[in-house]
Length: 310
Length: 321
Image 1: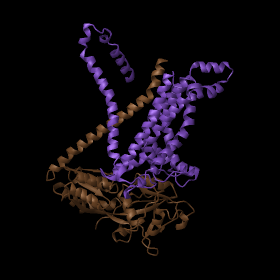
Image 2 (image 1 turned 180 degrees about the vertical axis):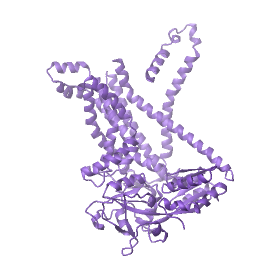
Image 3 (image 1 turned 120 degrees about the horizontal axis):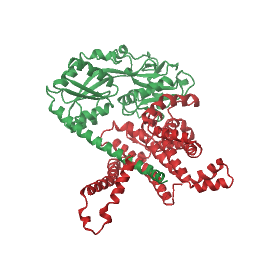
Image 4 (image 1 turned 90 degrees about the horizontal axis):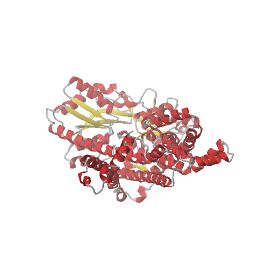
């Protein structure tokens, strides 16, 4: 009985204590990480010359697979260099570049004026390199009969103006809107160039019913199994089991399916350049790496579903 | 195990000879090891309080600025578009509340009946198997459950209930119910266990059947313990992040009708988790996310305090009932 009594007393107390402990551990770890980053910063800062052997590369989730492929190929040719690539979103990478924790930031959008100002305030002058082109594909489930949409129709669908597939020539089904999270560069690009149709004065927003998926995988798994869903993502992330919609800029113009060809010749309307940013004019190993990406590395771009510069 | 060890250590310390022989010459020569252990334990104990306070001050420091950076009308509005400086937290707060309440509505009957079965009806061998299994249930990582929910439960919800998408508040509630079940079962079971044997004997002596004894005497006698179980389960559910983010669809819409159960929602935890990685340090959005953190902290704190004080009161009256 005494044993029972003891045990009975424990759950709430130990739960509280456990949660405290967990928070404390998290705090300790984060402070450890911060100091770790600080250490790294001074290392790369000191070694921007010829002796840099570690290139930290972080940012856009759209670019992460391509950046990894580049890193692997480059490290094969230059075993003395180590390139580490992480994702997290364009904003995350740019913030890390401004803080000096990474040497190269990957971004699927241009730096915002306030980010450039923040960099200047921190003594960093970012340099921009367009490294590849990307098209944003609008995708639906293979069982959805809809094949063609105009930008205006896509905009109306995403603002909630059109709520049934019947209104755009499909079956009588409700439309389920899928989007990437608002921290994704793809989200901002899609909003500005598709929903607002490039009109900078437009105040249109995603419908509040839009499902924000934390990953590309979240979008593709929902598209695969839900005939009501419409989504968008970088061309490199569209798998064979999703149906890509042919898009037209105006009501009577040609409907174009995104591909390397149509992006390069400019006929596909939802395409954008992808960027790498360095804090200051690159030198030494970093310069060599970026030059290689802009020339030799371009052969890898098409393999990953993106569009090369030339 | 370590709890027993700590208890015996505590007993040793509290019954140390130095204190018993107060006034004798030995008190001055208190062994330094004891002093060391005692003060270490004391420092560790008090540091817990210190850490909570530090965390709370940190949250306040980072979160409170949002109150003067964002107008109250915006802050308690019904639209959450942080990229465009629209910080209406209402859909997020309601979203968390909606999912949590739905989860408890699912978990409460399941949890209480399971506890009743384990305590009152199951044969000994079944109890020996069930109890550890329920503890295993508590150990499944939430991201695994989230993956399972995304690929199995969500399609199932969509096809069987004929809703536009399976990523709904209901799907999240099912997963959360599953996660809070271990807490609810074990606390409810303890509550049932502490109903005095005399109640049971009296009911049976009055001619009540086993079933009548359980449902009319034992469960009602344990109801405040069950309420504690519900509160602890709620505390578990409201703070859950990963699984909820993967299956609720994360659309920041206002869940106002019963039909919203089968529509997507966005919870506070999912919002913080999804957006904190991106946000610029010190921006309005950053402060808004910490503001959400303050709300979450206060909510879970209140729930835990209510549960703990209920347990404390009941134990003073003799047993958790």
